[in-house]
Amino acid sequence: MTAARFIPTGAAALPILRPRLVLVGDAPTAYGAAITTPEAVWALFANDAPTWDRERFLTLALDTRKHLLGVETVSVGTLTASLVHPREIFKALILANAESFICVHNHPSGDPTPSAEDHTVTRRLKEAGALLGIPLLDHIILGHTTFHSLQADGEI
Image (cartoon, rainbow, N blue to C red; front, side, top):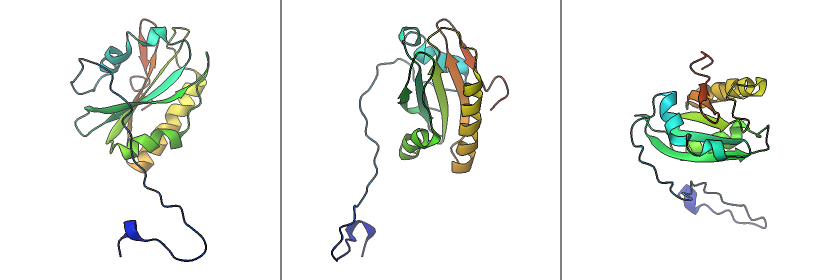
């Protein structure tokens, strides 16, 4: 008896789950190289990030060669905050078979200086990634004309 065909008998019905990753669309990009530097991440979002009027928190799922498997918008928040929890971040990373990931979010003010909350979420995601075997490589904060890498600060 296989797990997929197991349906218990009796009065109660059990919900049978099959998680899957759904591709919701493609964004055109000329970028196909491995993503190994903060500058490579900046190149992906430099044109769009200045137009975002609210904080957006995204994850870049990477394969073993650091090529992009996909980008997920985890949260779209307010002018000054975005709600982020490890459970939402790792759901898509696991389903995409990501080997590692990079977090990216913007500051609508244009100033990419990390806040106390940015440091806290980075630490939590680094710890969760280590536990799950999907390491956090960097957390990039996007401003209007520049970016800030928390990996370059030595936090990751």
